[in-house]
Amino acid sequence: MLQRSVSLCVVLGAGLDSFAQRHPGKTTVFEVDQRGTQVWKRERRQALGHPLPTLVPVDFESGQSWPAELESAGFEPAQPAVFASTCVSRYLSKATTAETLRAIAGLAEGTTFAMTFLLPQDLLGPTDRPGPRTSRDGAKAAGTPFVSFYRPEEMQAMARDAGFTDVRHVSGTALAERYSAGRADGLWPSTGEDFLIARE
Image (cartoon, rainbow, N blue to C red; front, side, top):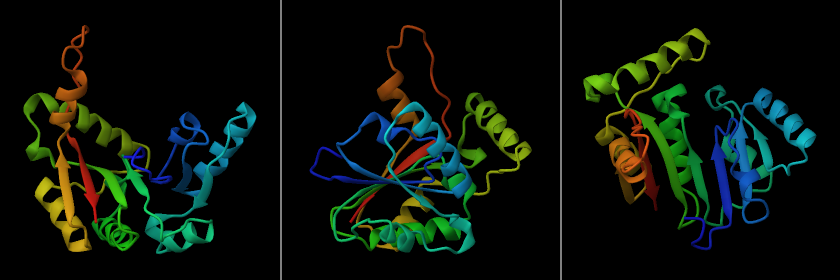
């Protein structure tokens, strides 16, 4: 997507994402995440001599307007951008995710949003259930429980209701078949997390 002359990338809930580090100078990157995570990340990158993207501290569930904070940090809403949010929607309420979709759908034509979402347990096959269950239990024990799960049709409907016209669902199974088929070690990822790709 970034090769289609889009030079802005916004990573929502960036955590320890390393896109900016792996693609220095090619794309202007904004990372939106909680302040504490960004403080640690800033210190580590500076200690290692890596360039910093623009860090935008926001708590998504606090009611703080991340689009306003992003624009204040130098983001140009009139330019098309790629927004990415992986392994984040599980921690957010469905109302917050719906509001995020609406905010991005209202930006410049050509903007693309790629996000992952967890499937409810009943959509997983028996062999795929132990991995996600272990992840859920670990997150709960760490004080960061998973709170939102989506059926693919529900997530697609949310994106259309938000204003996106081109909405695609990419299943974890399809990704596994694309990237893991033919591995010499026979490893195969468990399913349970799918992608939504949405464009205006």
